Length: 327
Image (cartoon, rainbow, N blue to C red):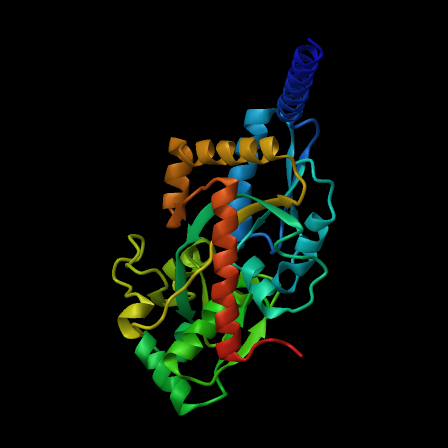
């Protein structure tokens, strides 16, 4: 009799714990968001990462009835922005939209003010930007092969600009350098807009940046698109070849992601992830991202974490081959 009663009490207690945990998760999810949301962006306004954040942000605000503020915190490789988010309260109200710079910095630096894996919770991959190999018209080159020939003719004299050490524009430039077998100098800036200005002014001879930020300058003739960095030609620049057509060994990796501080409740992560997926299915958003050849590719939080680890491993290989790890 005593054993039967004890068993019944244990069952009821377990049910109470389970029910309490379930109720707590439901309460956490339903209470979110309870205040304005801040999306930290590691780069300057006008960069691809910034534009994507400003596409997603207003739709989140519209859906949830809470203000969504875009907070630009440019720095080398986005390290400052990452540090801010890593230390934020893990309740889903501070997020970060980032690009390949996140995995790039993780590969480049043995010591960071945060742990790129342990201090963040992945929410979703956002997608991929189509990149373009750009040069100033005054340089006089019309193709990838001509740019390589010039660099071989003037070793160490050609400069490529980027959005900062460890950024996706830096990693893409280094992969291009390795694939082409050329000696060029790298100069990093606070954002892709600054990197493009240097190319337009002729102070840098090339850069690999997103079409999101460079397309208008290409179309008005201030920049020349020598090639695109995607496996296939872009529908927006159908006459421009891919880099791989001239350099079959060239490849690019990395994507734009949405992250939160580690410890953010799983129901909140899932809710934001599902909302981002819904946003990218909206007809007006589909049309808008098509205008700059952005490929939306949202994932679950679990899928994102696997992708991030793979990107860090890939960029670590690039860093080793290029001898980039700072002393």
